[in-house]
Length: 504
RNA sequence: GCCGCGUUGGUCAAGGGGUUAAGACGCCUCCCUUUCACGGAGGAAUCACGGGUUCGAAUCCCGUACGUGGUACCA
Image (cartoon, rainbow, N blue to C red; front, side, top):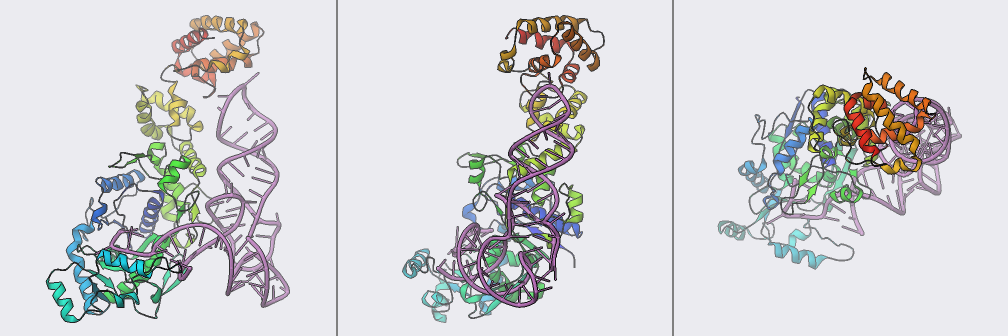
């Protein structure tokens, strides 16, 4: 049987870490088994429609390099891939269930439901469910006569279709990660399958669409585990258990306190979304990993290792290695806390491992956005090669590489002043004069000149290096000073020293 | 409350009856470097608790605690 998996997001906001990891595991599994990865948009809740959210998800997947084989964008044989466009499909399945006694019409209004919950609420049971007991006291096709139901239906009375959970049964299935899991049907409520507006709920839609789209393996977050018995029963009554995909419920990615949320990101200063997301109502911007300066390779690599490892000591994987090594059997059952420090480490490793040429593609726009003009790509690559070891995020290149393209915006004179004196002042002005005369503008020659002059003036060369660095760079950072001088050229070197001397 | 799932250093984790209980991040010390990094060498730090089973338990079983998720005409 062909492996077909799907990621089924509801387009209501930013795509967070956990979502991307679900995509990733789906993708890796599909590619490992030479199967198909489908993206299905679960937009059945019309009250939660968010403009741009769907396109945003596609952009994130594109950035991550995890593009689907079938979707609203790439098309496919099993469309439409947007559930709102599949609306007419679902009702018949719900009706079949009613006809077979596995579901029923319910006419209770939202107010009546509220009353029911209020009336049955006790300290012991703070959230009463519409279950096999309560349904006997509500207005539905189980309590009403056939004629009454017919009448209500004919009048077009708003109603939903609910699953009739069987009594005193145990429903169990084997999860690919957790093994056998079972539930008592008495403790599960009669979930709504078809809403009053005719749209299916997730429960109905996921089963019908997984069947129609020939999904072989269904992976989703652990938060879905409690509703698995509903899906299981639906499969049993609609299509047969032998048709059901194999389930795997992925562990949650936790924040510093509980489930990772947008709030955690704001509170602790790390991104939780793949890419920038701005709320269309409030305009509030939530920073994404991309804009924070992460490489997609690093982001994916880091995500893969939250909840999975191949049993060896390897931690750095390309996407192809992940496809080759990934197996669901080695995915953990327990949730994992997201560690931003480790995430940065992955990014640093990937920056070090990529070539200057590859990095230039990402770095150039970042420099330009910071107002740095890059005229020569070959020069940019030389600079990147020189500084990439000290950049953890791509945005670090602005500080680490910026001074190769323009004079420092400010000079950290405080780093120099405490040990500054006339002798040093004199050294540098003479040094400038000598530099002007220098024929071969090469690292070795510049350094030799510097050291000879220092020796002649009996100043330790080491004590002069820091001031020189600050003059050229603006602060206490960057690669070897003479290398910087060589790269920025004679004129810039002399000019920077001279203008800095005026400040000291 | 009830139900599900989980529990190896601060974090990610290997290990699934006999190990000095790997490794990584972070932290600390030292070396390299008269910047910051990279790199190198070290260090501190762990099997939630209580009962079983067993010659032997981090590993198997039960209980407790804790964590986490669910408990919507949201997904």
